Image (cartoon, rainbow, N blue to C red):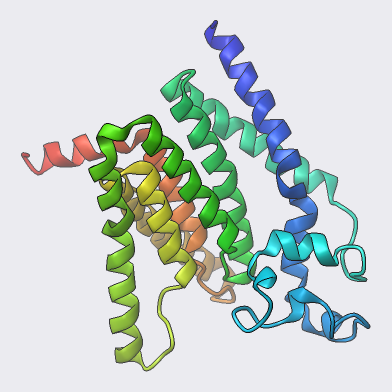
Length: 266
């Protein structure tokens, strides 16, 4: 296929998927606006709204924000119409990121899996930024993509299996030890741990380590800037930076790993 035609196909696909994907604009607006407790507590449907019940203490459906949204959107008085400019911006971003992946991998199944993962990462970043929570269905979807890639490349099963635990186990230990030292319930979100486990299955342990390192670097730089500009008003959400790191690893993780090993003389 002609290179420019390939780019066009991925751009159009990115735009369409960015618009259609879980009716993105409405879903994200709904999740973020649920943080407005005053509006939700005054709603006449609050006692029956699945989305208002505490996560982990209610019907299993409330663990899945997409399902919750579908079930309550008709009765919710606070969900407003879709912001078309906002959704179009996300769709364009999605399309550009798709084109970048197609530039690196060409027309392969790997490209398609990474593209679908990229769309998921966009919404993980946006939702976690606004709510400090990563919906479980997004991590499940990335795990499914990892399983598909594993079936297509069965010879790499050990690398992917190690990737499932490499970063996630480290983060889990940091969470457990840090929580005891600081006398807190958690120091790292469970969604972040699950995200790196899912990404490890998709990418393998080497690229997953690169993704984590890049996420830490992006988080350190960007959050310091935000703290400086916003005077520390925004709570740190690690998910958006991990999502950036995962995408960077998909685009140039192998090159970064080779560069680093070269510097170390390995």
